[in-house]
Length: 414
Image (cartoon, rainbow, N blue to C red; front, side):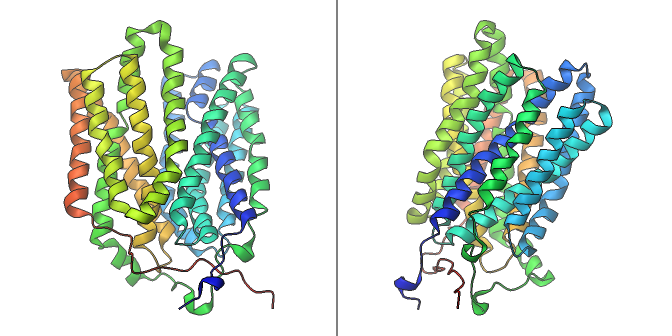
């Protein structure tokens, strides 16, 4: 058994570097999505053209998540995935800034989708190597905090730049923000990112081990729970925000700002606590917290329409999203411990997110058009309740109190 003296704490420089990577990566990603739609609208693109361009990014991110995860699992230095992903996203921003012509915009959106598919597993894998399995929960929560702060602050700055300078300024700023991401990678030293002895090296992935993961009951149940989480949550804000802004057009700007910034603030405050608590109390309580808030959010929107209910609902959604964001990574790390397939499995969970979100907008839109917004919210709340019940009856605790993995030991200079 390893003595406590030989189990080092994570390198402070590497931890600060990860803080910067999460903050500035989230800042870079903020420059896409709604800002692209505004920019293309200013350049007289039709809604159909804009929708097609945004769909390219979504499809590229979806189809590349599992291959990107498998690639990251095979990389000896996980920082290379972050490097490649941020360069692709930065180049996409430069293409958008250079010209709004269709071929280059489509190429930019494809690059953004492919680069994003590398960033998520790259950051998760680097965090695991820096913090070690035992401290991974708190590190994931800290990642979420800095990403949330970066997203919220940058959204305000980019909104001001797009409004008072020019819409294209958003993409010049996005490209510039890739530089601090690259600088933040430098203090994350390879010698301290999870170097292990030969006997502790996880086995190389094989088809047999992959098949074992695919039939793992915990992963199957968790995949279904993630689909239900996003089936319930993805459409709530668009429907609620649309209804409120139609009834209170003078408050539209303030309402939209609140729906963006308030959840980010909640995530920043709660995520580290969720990570720490999950290490002490286990994963199931935090999973039930995240999923259990969704029915409450749906019922709130259905019964108390208005700006106050929307704001309160977004606070609840922020808490639910914080729990989900931290726990998905931790549960996957628990289940894949020792298999060297952490990022591949994380990519598969990303597919579950896309499936649930896609179904949510179609499902809720159909119900809202036929029966009204209130019925749509109740249906979304029911989907969330189904997720809670599935967790209760089908998802065991994945954190093993009897099995501890020592923190990574730096390679000796000898």
